[in-house]
Image (cartoon, rainbow, N blue to C red; front, side):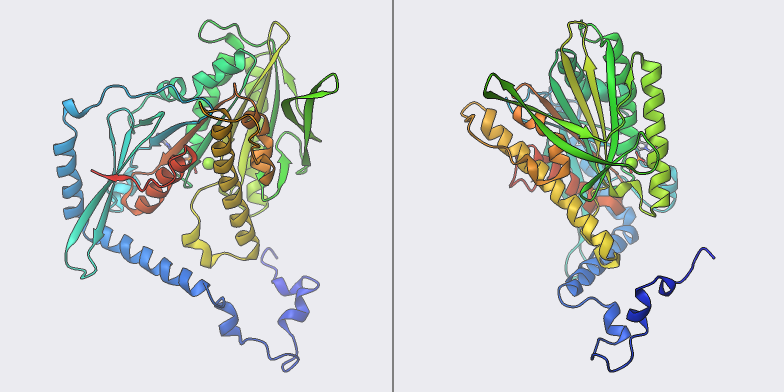
Length: 433
Ligand code: ADP
Ligand code: MG
């Protein structure tokens, strides 16, 4: 009964049993194969497969080559001084985190192709065959990130302290901040975010860096799936509407604004235990809703907004975004129409994010101009974060998560490239080590 055929749905019957000759439609065989450009997708898919296959088949020499690189390049003296910069005004702090290679992956013949060098450089060892399919070579692509890079042995509190604690401190001063997790599915976005949440919840209530904690916190937690926002804090997949509220002084707009979540349930909590309970409720709903809708949570962004009321009556806000899985193109040919739309939407929202960060930098950096408009209306993701783009005192950070497995080489490279671009290094292909 569960796998009722699609033809029993009203409306689709006609399409399937369309009388022959009604219109010279495509044959079944050719209908399955998308027309035109998608053959290019097939080809890309095949190439990707070949690359992976050769990487796996030649794992011994490739892994040996990676080891040799490490032996030569990871000397104690090469460990650069702590390079954490204070981000330029209006910019975003960019971090990457490498997760450990898991035993089951090792047993499948995977090897570790990501190296963290010093405090802020990630190197992806891209193992490839020459076109003659005889000679092998390894390209060592390095990216140096403004915030820093965490290796697979990092302690969770260190990740929090470097990436999120500055945003929490800003929130406790009455400002706003946002933190994004970006990376392919399975690379550790949710794992990293959950640990940051734990630390942040405590710090927001108990205070941090000498700043007193919040009196109350209003929580909102929702998913952005395609163009719609769906509440995670009430049953029934209730939709949330975003409404911009502009601050006025007398008749004048001050340039400050915030976004109201119309229709959202936003409980106000007074202690860390209560807050954790609400967060758990939202997480459980994200799990079940993704199973029911037959879409994995990897296809939606999860947004948690913590609006903090301080003892002096002012408010601050921290927004935590666990982005949809970054893997795209490669599996495109196997997606149906709905999934293609979602993919387009996810790509659009990430592009919008990058653009907003860029315009914000133009607006607030040293030679910036306050008349620059940040195009935050282009996607729900950036609309939710609008206040972070228009306020010059907002803090922004992104953590790109990476799997070290050789099979994920392309994804890890793409993640570094994208977060680097979000940070403003557009034409950076990584430099060769
Ligand atoms: P994503 O949210 O990016 O899809 P997850 O956070 O769910 O990925 O991580 C996938 C799996 O890997 C989970 O079982 C998670 O517990 C584990 N994992 C991820 N990052 C780490 C890490 N740094 N240390 C240990 N386990 C991790
Ligand atoms: Mg996840």
